[in-house]
Image (cartoon, rainbow, N blue to C red; front, top):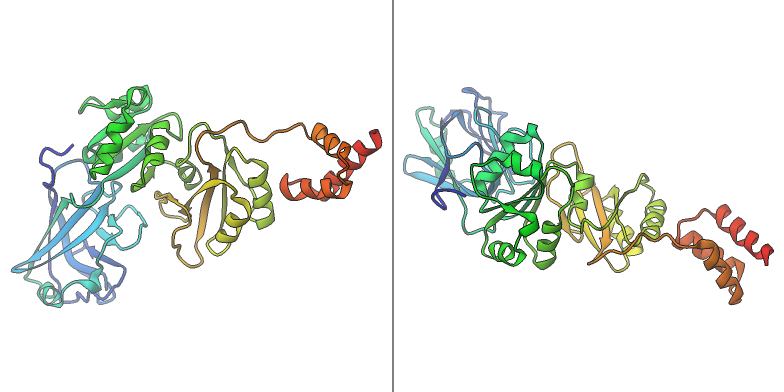
Length: 380
């Protein structure tokens, strides 16, 4: 927890440049290089260097204030704990996190800054101050961090930015260290943590063993809060929204029919599949049933924001989707197929109807369904 809530997390300095254009509509950048060309349309300052850093890194909602003389502008965004001092600092309107990304989900880009500020930034003699503070007016959210020793710098930044740190296992406790008190997941008071989230505080849950967390599942079930999953590939990150009692099934198929069959076959599992954004609504409508849905955008950059339901997605994007039971999970849907088929035959249900049900609902192939049903019919 910060010693001074809402205090300064980071101070940087840079200077203006004659070739600053600031016409980019998706990013703004404080460049580490001293020289740029007019093609660097997102740059709003050059020769950027860190003057003060309150912790090993920054995370969570922040306010970034750009000041030059009497002119200033403030950008609200979400800090990226991957970013390290000494590199260029990019602020993105999207959620894409790269190593040079200081913050994402910004409400302004270079082209949105006040024109009077940009006029000052085009003067090479201008000194520019950048101040990053925690944004107390925005919900801090819930973070699940699947940590390893190699994640130490990022984990330290997340720990420093959290109001509560929950550890799931002994390895996680060792990785967090003794610098601050933690909550043992086995003794966690979900009511207290839920109240903290409702007040806009940031709760960090650290695990080194399991890819999912009962604490996270419990907190997500109680309220809709901003949620991030760090340290996991997107296929597992999107499944982290579900209970740890749900087995995870990864679908090795991008064909719509194959996806639907697998989801139906594993009604009590968290089934994860990959598809395009335009395919997703149809697949979910056909296969979902009485189950919850979460999605995450796939890609080469870090995908760390699973979201419930089907949010507005970038056109043409590839996404990972998880369809899982709501609430407690039972065993996966493994049934006595032979006994069930015989019972249906005894009730006078036709071979064709039973075979079609096995094909459509259980994901059987046409040949497999008809051969099994015919074989059991002949045994009568």
